[in-house]
Length: 64
Image (cartoon, rainbow, N blue to C red; front, side, top):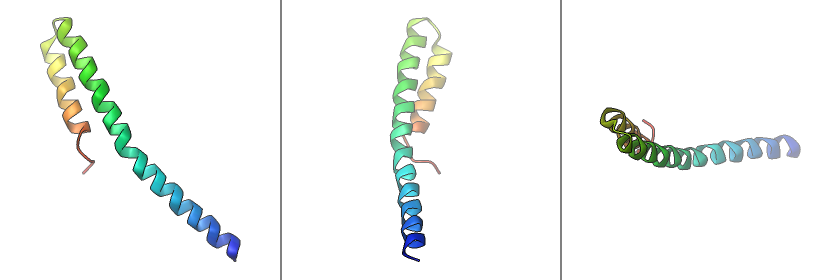
């Protein structure tokens, strides 16, 4: 019984780690989108730059 309980606790902790890792991933995506927006703007594509900036804005907020 103790083994089943510790496995269950480990699974819960693992899920918490995954959830905690979700937001840093979104921060990374946002940062990369801003960098790609800068590159697009430098290449003369303001429409693509604007879309990437919108992606960065969405990535900067926790998922709904």
